Amino acid sequence: MANYFNTLNLRQQLAQLGKCRFMARDEFADGASYLQGKKVVIVAVAHRV
View 1 (cartoon, rainbow, N blue to C red):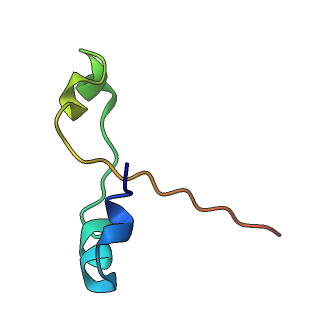
View 2: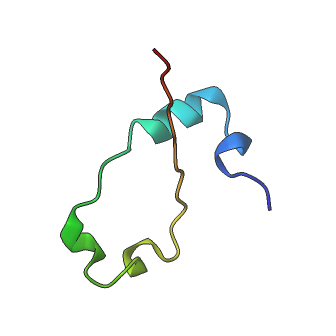
View 3: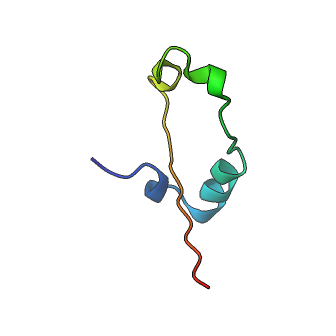
């Protein structure tokens, strides 16, 4: 399976990242059904000191 995010050009990637938001706890009342049928990108950032 191809990585959807990596198929986008840089401009599209930045536009997608600009749409990020944290989901509220109550949005998971029915489990993760809210996410069914949606494309989800999980971005992890690590910082070393």
